[in-house]
Length: 114
Image 1 (tube, rainbow, N blue to C red):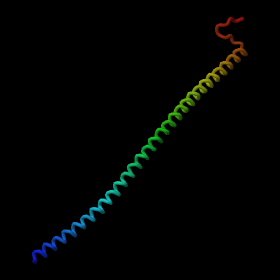
Image 2: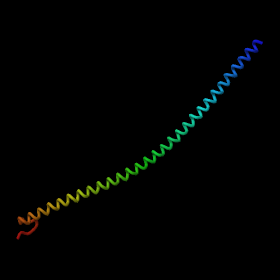
Image 3: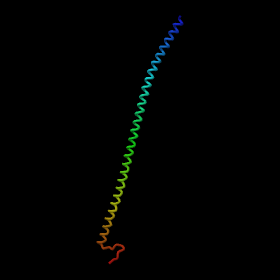
Image 4: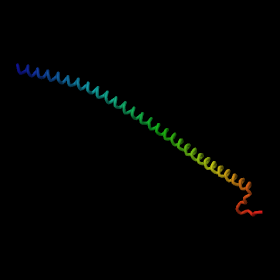
C-alpha cells in the first residue's frame, strides 16, 4: 500500500511537471512565433528601404550625369569665349600697330616704297 501511494505521488508529480512543461512550451512557441513575425516585418521593411535607396541612387546618378554634361558644355563655351576674346585683343593690337605704322609712314613689309 505504501508503495502504491509513493508510485501514485511520483506519478502525480510527473503529471504536474509535464503540464508545467506543456504550458512553458506553449508560451515559448507563442514568443517564437511573435519573434518570427517581427523578423519577417523587419526583412520586408529592409527590402522596401533598399528598393527606395536603389531608386534614389538611380535618380541622383541621372542628375549628376545631366549636371556633368551641363558643366562640360559651360566649360567649352567659356573656353570658346576666352579664345574669341584673345583673338579680339590680338586683332585690336594689330589694328593699333597698323594705325601707328600709317601715322609714321613706315612701309609694311612686302610693299613698294614710293
